[in-house]
Image 1 (cartoon, rainbow, N blue to C red):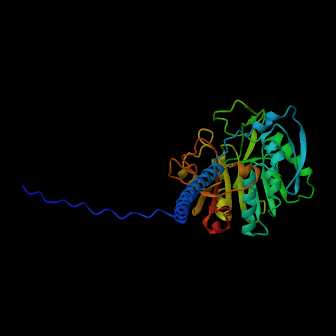
Image 2: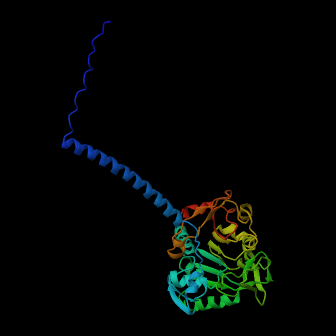
Image 3: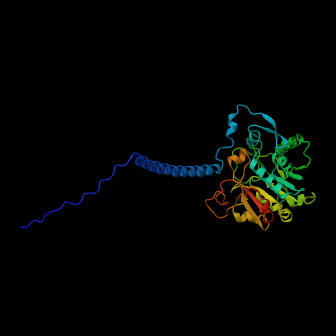
Length: 349
């Protein structure tokens, strides 16, 4: 048997040992790659954190606005200077506490109205304040308009309103009417707050009442807005504020001709059922003339403290958005209704 000779396979060339400079370069590449990965991770975390912060900033206020009244061991009256006028209030009342601490109640709403009137640039603009309470909003509006007509039917807060007017003799453009507005001329029973928030009084005596409410001792007068205002020699009504705790529908029905003629921007706090009667977007839309568009002023902590605001288009269809009329029926909504021809004057869009 013949055995073929075998040959050893050629040996692989021997690799040169890496030099110290090679090792340094390799370590640098690895370090750069590591830093790049860490940078991308940090960027992702930062973007996520910004998103969370923005979301939290724009969440509705969940803190109980009455919480700060529990901090005081004694309640007292006070007078403050606020935005060019004096205001008399009392601690223990949520509205007055906010004015004492932050300079205003619903400061974002006030600043929004101020900026709208400024953008509108009408030197003879008229503002109507329905549900004027103790005059806080009215006094603020007096700085932004030629004339303010305030409507308030509840005697105890009328007394405070008149004291606040007396504190501000320089304010000459405010007229106080001691009646409520509605869609009939009649005297109606009234439920009034017994503590904390004197802005909760309502003519909706048929709705479920908070334990802190009681029927007022006398009926209060309601008038039809269009009839009552027709002899008041109105200039151009630029803005109407309505805060009437569930009585929004009668008020709007009673000023229908005013809305058609003057086409003002309207800020109306709409209460959910059963407190209020405006149960759907169609109901809301029917209370306004043609070519009005609807927005929301969402409540926020910065709005209360700093007066910042963001106007959001009202979503009539979504069942999830907090700016949807249907989704928010468990709470009041601050609706802004603006005629299309004045949309360019709306701030905060």
